Amino acid sequence: ITARRGRFYMGMDIKIRIVGRRSGCEQWLQDAYSMYETRLRPSTLEVETIWHKNDDDLVKGVRSDFEKKHAVVLLDALGKSYTSEQFSENLYNWLEFGGSRIAFVIGGADGLPSDLKQYVYEKDRGGNYRKGSINVRCVLSLSSLTFTHQFARTLLMEQIYRASEIRKGSGYHK
Image 1 (cartoon, rainbow, N blue to C red):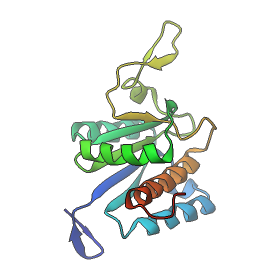
Image 2: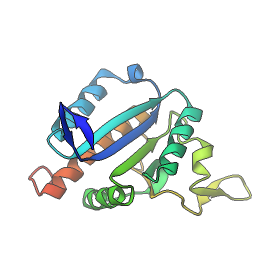
Image 3: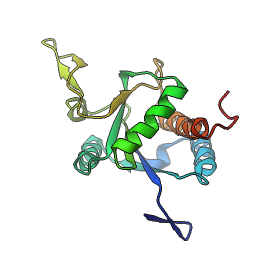
């Protein structure tokens, strides 16, 4: 139960953990993110972005989520791609697994720190990462294209909104 706009409600909390500075985000990306944030307000999904100064702070935050048994989804180019319908179904499954709490993790300009990749990938003899034993709910790829981490945050927010609309059966997703 949390306070929201002066009322208490029981909702689902989504964190987007990202390396960078809020002020480093281009205005058009922030405007797009804010639009989806506003559209989500009537729902039971509460999305919060947590900006981390560096990789070490990001790793500490994710470890805290692990300890609290929250679902953790890492965004990585080597991750699994989903259709919007599959993402919607998985989002609500991940929320159920994590006690209505989930953290999406976006690395900085150099991607996810190696301390987080160790939870997901094992290194082969050449020092390259390959899929290993997964200690997180999912490793997600938004696309095979490369995006800035700020753009990935906005794209993820749109997909979270789309997932909520798919769940409601609205006409937003066609």
